[in-house]
Each structure stands twice: as C-alpha cells, then as structure tokens.
Length: 109
Image (cartoon, rainbow, N blue to C red; front, side, top):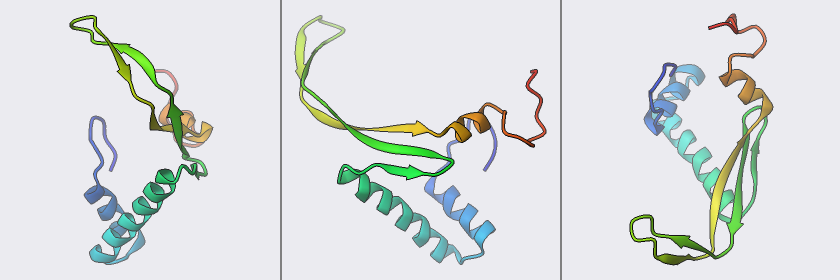
C-alpha cells in the first residue's frame, strides 16, 4: 500500500487486513466496514473521533454566510451546515515528512 499518487480504497484496506492480520477476506472486509461505520456513526452524532498517533476527526458547525458566484458576482446566501475536519497528530505529521525516528530516510533531498 505504499507509493506516490495512489488512492487507497476500501478494497486495499481489506486486503491489507487480510495479509497482515490473517483473517479471511470476508472477515477482513467485515472488520474494515465495521470500523468505518463506527467512525461514521460517531461523527454523525457530532462526536470527535481521536485515533492515537494518527489524528482526530471532528465535526464543526458553520453559520450562515454570504457567498459570491464567481462567474456573475451575484451574492448568494450559504446556509448553515456541519463540516468534518481532520487534524493529523504530530506523529503523523512527522512520518509523512520523513522525520520519524529510525525510518532510514535522509532529510536532504
């Protein structure tokens, strides 16, 4: 599941669980779906989902505001809504920037 420019899908996650955990493909798929459903259900209720060493998913409320149609310049009201935001942990930030201890990568590229 490594590489640049690749999109990781549910199928990829299921396959990784199958390869690394040793569950059957059916069990791996059910496990991944269960985890994603639990995260979705918690966010739907407005709860924060915090995954240690990974990050936090949060739901924020945005109030009504006035937007502008870029083509016509017409002002349009944007209704209040809830948005999901992800805040990566410091550990994840370090890992994606190649600064994790013991990863063998050089900082000079």
